[in-house]
Amino acid sequence: MPSGEFCVLCGRTAGPLTDGLCAACAADRTTLVTLPEQVEVVLCPTCGARLVRGAWTRAGASPVLSSEDLAPFLSVHPEAGVRSLTWEERAHTASLRELSGTAAVRFRGIERTVPLATRVRVLSRTCTDCGRRSGGYYTARLQLRGEPAPRTRRPKELRRRLDAVWSELWEEARSDWKNAFGWREELPEGWDVYFTDTLAARSMARLAKQRFGIRIVESASLFGRKNGQDIYRVTFCLRFPDAVLAAGPPAARAVPGEAVER
Image (cartoon, rainbow, N blue to C red; front, side):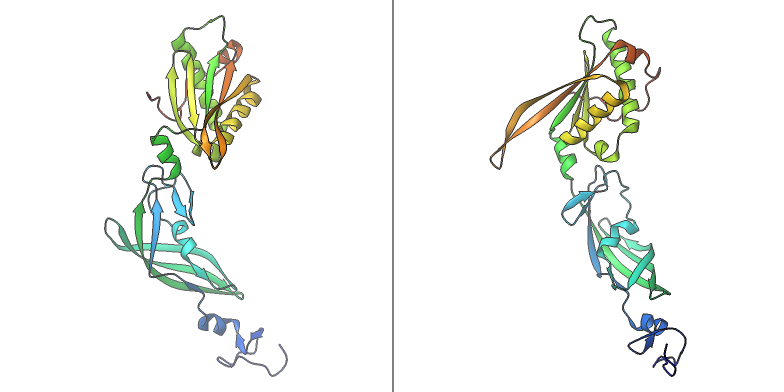
């Protein structure tokens, strides 16, 4: 700071000035963070996904509101950064919650806490994926099978082994692949696992091939048309030889999705 310059409010001479104000006085006179008096949070009652800017995100999240739910509604000064955000519920009804909170903000090297308050209207709406699952919609399926012939295992034992192998794959799957899981069906010859996203199903099939060195047979069938283009459902048949099934885990772990009848 050039000699003789000082903050026009506090008279401080140490540190840089901006428009005649030191960082501390500028922080006290600047609106660092604001929040609307009332906001709406749309969540799926089935999987906990949130509708944010027209897109469903955070499938599997808790139905309890968190700082992450309110962050999209914050308006932050371009020179400020929110370091943390804490909230406390003051009152609530079935669909409306009154919250007070504190934002820890850094502005031009100065730390400040900003009090915030808002009302949150919580709206329940079934997300796209859950709506598709409930309606039996899918774009791809994995067929978990043993070798086609000769059969060396009884159907019940074969399904148990395939079930255990599927649990192994599920533990290694990425979260976005898991979010596309629809349901699974138990069949005499094995399992059918349905997905609402073809890329996720293909990724699971490739993981199985990489993990166990199995054969995959891919086929597609015409399902309909959208915007003038054909829409296909893809089936991936995964053939697990006896050597792989015999080396599988002796006891099945928690398997995603209970078998359903359709």
